Length: 168
Image (cartoon, rainbow, N blue to C red; front, side, top):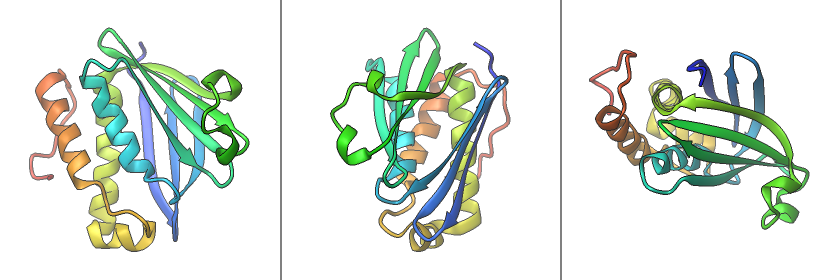
């Protein structure tokens, strides 16, 4: 596990966000549609890495492309594989192997979760709950999912990175 991860989530227009994930060897960037509650799904998927569910799957809609995230628990780490399918409406039940591997990395759970929490918190600080919902349109900002993931991260991970105690 490398322990080097960057994650960004930027609202890039009405109903659109740019998601960027990178490690020491590769980067992927996706323009995500509001047709799925993508940020909430990501936070909930990472929360699953604290339970006994060793695999979490969720998809982002890129209209019409599907980006399917597969998270696998490995010791104290998380294997992240992101598959690309040409049409979300046609690939819903397709096995992961039918997609094209777009990005893959294995990271310590604490490093990955910390990076995603920080990115989500930055979105909330920049836009606020009302501003996020006004720009994302179909779904509110996932406050409860962010709070729950932060709680699990602080409780179960030995994260050596700074944490802002004033954040919800």
